[in-house]
Length: 82
Image 1 (cartoon, rainbow, N blue to C red):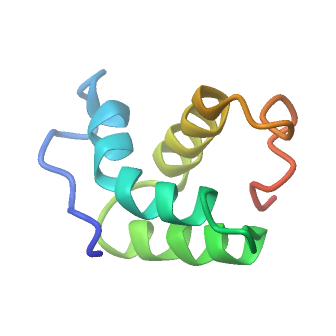
Image 2: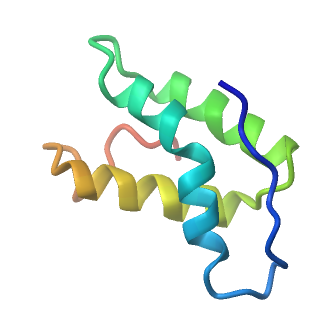
């Protein structure tokens, strides 16, 4: 599962949604894993940054996806690395 690089310019207000779409498949695999961990998300964040996403975009997209899943840790994003 490869993370797609950004297409929209960094000033585009919809870029975070593009980031969310780029991370969705990998995030879902992590979120549905019985061994979900902050280490797995940290690796996802690092890989996303390496292909051109900003850390802020990645964290916002991940937090939105966590909230959308209505997971118990969603409000405090307890499994999102600091």
